[in-house]
Amino acid sequence: MSEEIKEGPEFSATETAEAEGPEKASDEADALTDQVSDELTGSAEQATDEEPPAGTEEEVVLEEERVKDEIEIQIDLAKDPDWVVRREAVITLGEMADERCVEPVLAAIRDGDWQVREVAVEAVGNIGSPAVDGLLRLLRNWDVRRDVLRAMGKVKDERVLDPLMVQLKSDEFHEYASDALVELGQPAVERLVAALKNKDEQVRKQAVIALGEIKDPSAVDPLIEMLKEEDWFTRLSAAAALEEIRDERGREAIKPLLKDPDMVVQLRVERILAGWKKQPAKG
Image (cartoon, rainbow, N blue to C red; front, side):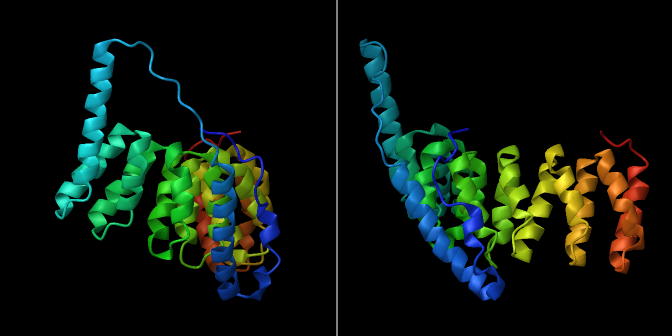
């Protein structure tokens, strides 16, 4: 896991225009996408000099040349007219996980064939942190944003947290951003808990769902507070999230929802509690 962002836009600063409707929120998410990408890629452009490989023996040099030649071969194959060839080349580049593989793999996310794009997302995950700057640039492209968000969850780098939180506001991409945050896991919990107080109802809902899937016990008390939400679906989602975490505090907290004004919530909570009895709760 790479370093946390020391400087960057605070998520709470994006809330000022949230009450103006879903179209406004989506426009704002797009604008913030560009802003966050600029700031994060700008702060990461300092080049670092790599130490030369230890030893000067002839076999070391020959091995380096062999690897270099293989990478160049795969880069050329990634441009082949045949999608099957491109697909295999992208898989290989991902397995090599060399920094020289970053650009051709990111280019494959824009490939015209969906099967090439699928393996490109996985390849980005194999390469990891060296691909983050390129992903942030690609995030501006609406046409490939879905796959970029999916790839962000696989790189396991905390620099993608702010861009993903911004995308929770997007009408088109909030679910992909939420799934990526779940893949990141515990490092995303603090920001998701903070998002439970966001003015945007969609952001709150996605944060509740993601926290339930991550199953971090530190989210129990904030999720219990969400059981008081005016929106019935948010209350229901919070109850389901607490069920996933299986903390004793959560089981007690959802019992009053047996008398919830919404019948769907009542029925779901009945099933949750019935299932919970079959397994001892944690905590």
